[in-house]
Length: 319
Image (cartoon, rainbow, N blue to C red; front, top):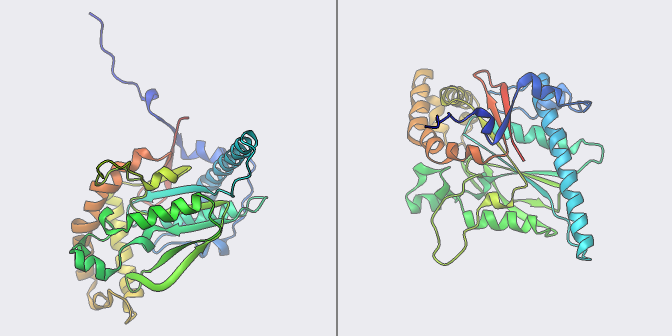
């Protein structure tokens, strides 16, 4: 009888790099961000050090620069073959991950680094928050308590936006969102004009399941991505970061009378902790486990963070 062997880790679709091994892949990539530059890119309650940029984000920016160059060369080859001069098509990078995990900060740092490469590419950053339905629509649908879940986004508009950008349209607009009013900003738009690279960041950007349409092929946002990143961490750490962020917001943005959460600014620290944990349990944690975490292994690269917010290792999908 042949002995059945256990699957070996070498058959994983990913190659895993320790922090030190990944840092070496920076090669001679220069650091183009100063402490002053970095201070403008930080998220709430998340302070990324220059060492984190050097060890994690510089190697990643180098990899992405190589991928972008290869993609552009492939477009040139194809255009030559079909004797066609097509419109400029941007390289689209998707960044997914939980609330409070630091994906927005990762997006801003990558945007800054990629835009500073020698050929100075134009890099735009778009968040899917702008494609949430307005609060009045969420109220009408009865899903205000599921804000951030897949059904709370105008998926048709979001996919059309990315499709238009990816098709090389001269100018495409995206709605903008306010974290103060917790709603879409009426009449305010972000204009995208044929960037070299577009980074699109959001909770569910890697999702591939949904309501199937009979007799129609289903299109997903991730179909338009050239590269995808998932910012990962243990849920117990994300909960702590979320509560800490909530306490910071209570002392800052929530004090603004225009803030949707202004009423929470008067809560005690203990009361704020209890409320933040309740929101996590009933909304954000549920969304993470049901919709976000299941998409992790669809990403081409995973940044795994430890309890201090520092990336401990990187997983890169094998080609």
